[in-house]
Image 1 (cartoon, rainbow, N blue to C red):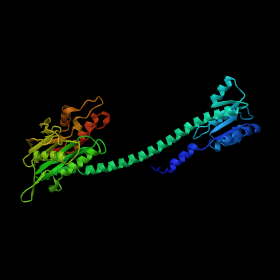
Image 2: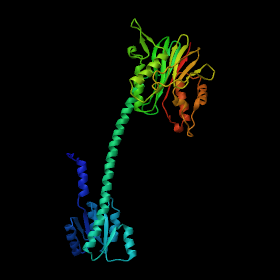
Image 3: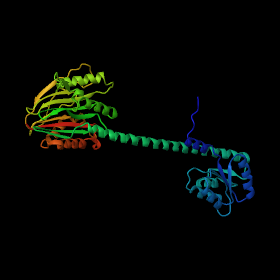
Image 4: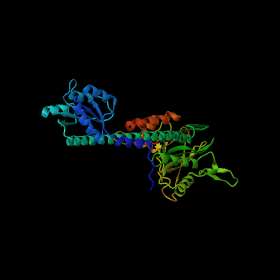
Length: 422
C-alpha cells in the first residue's frame, strides 16, 4: 500500500517533536560549565552557557530553553532567585529546572522546590546520575510537547468544524428563506372572507406547512400539515408535498383532476388525502409521515368540507362565543396503504372563524413539563376573539411562547385562520 504524502503542518509537528533539547548551563565556574557542556553535547543536547543568573535570564528571554542546569550558590543572583525569576517569564512551553548544589538539608531542598525547581543534583555531579535526571526531564517535556501538539491539532480541527458549522448555518438560513417562499402571502382578502397564514419554525427549517391548494373569488381550498420529525429531512418533505398541492400548475397538482374538455376541477378532500397517502407510500421511500387538515370552503354560502388526518381538531368560533372543536381525528398520511379518509361537512355563518393549527400550540410545555392542552387553548382563543387577521395569529404565538419553558417553542408553529364575512 502506498503511503500518502504528509502535509506541511504534520511534517512541522513531527520536526517539533523530534528536535533536540536546548539546555542552559549556569555556573560562575568556567571549569564546571566546561565539564558539563562536553558531556551534554556528547549526549546530543544543544548547549548554552551563562556565568551568572542575570546573564541566564537574558538568554531565557531571547531563546526557547527546554532544560536548565543551574548552580545554587553564585555571586549576585543565586540559583534560587534565578529559578524564581525564570518561572515568572512568559513562555509557550515548560522549562525543566535542575539545581546543582552541595546543600542536602531537607529545609533547603523544600525551599528550592517551592520556588519552582524540578530536581536537584549534588555536587560534584555524577555523570550517570546526571544522565538519568536529564532523561526524567525529557519524559516530562516529551509529554508536554505531545499534549501541546494534540491541543494544536484539536484547535485546528475545532476551527475547521466551526467553519463547517458556519457554512451549514448559512445554508440553513437560505433554506429557511426558500421554505417560507413556498407559503403564500400571510393575508389574503376575498370578497366575503379573509385568510391569514402563519409559519414559524422552531429551528432553521421545520416540518410544518400551510397554504392554498386552489383559490378563486368564490371558493378556496386551504391546508395545514405537519411532517414527523424536525430538521432538514422534514423540511425537504414539506417542500415536496407543497409542490404536490401547488396551485400554480394544475396539471402537476394532486388536488386537481382533468376533465374531458381538458379543463381542471378540484378533487374531493377525501380523494386528495387518499391520493397523497398512496403517493407517499409508493413514491417517497421514507419513514416520515404527516398529519394534515385540508378544507374546501364555498365563500358564498359558507359550506365547508374538510378532512382531518391525525391533525389537531380545528376550531370554529362564532362571535362572542367560546370556540368549538370539531373533527374525527383520522389516520395520519403515509402510514397505512389504502387508508380511507372520511370528510366532515360544516356550514360557516357570517362572522364565524375557522382555525387550522399545528400541535406546536397545544403541546407546548412549561418549566414543569405540563402541556398547554385544549382547555387552556380554548381560553386563549376566547381572549383574542375580537382581534382579526394576522394580529390574532401573532397573539396566539405570543401566548404560547409565554407559556413555554424559557420562552421558546418546542415545535414548529403553523396556522390557517379563515374569517368568513358572509
